[in-house]
Length: 95
Image (cartoon, rainbow, N blue to C red; front, side):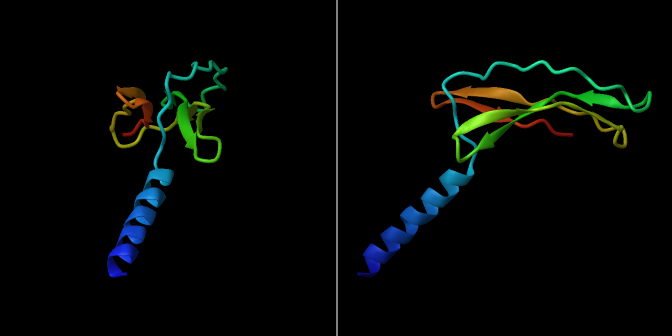
């Protein structure tokens, strides 16, 4: 009985964490071009839009880009699509 409970617990934990992680798609979604709003100040930099995984629809949705004030000389690395045998997965941009 203890082995069965352990097995059920392990399967539940794996299912929970796999449902929380971003998914894979068979092809990269089409890039969506949006108009940039006016720059709020001359020192602001444009951060391209990102892709966000939705667990309910099991798909990515595009998030618009934004202007951002510089952050202590740190450089922004844009997000990109990672390709693996499982498919494409979005790696979010970061500073």
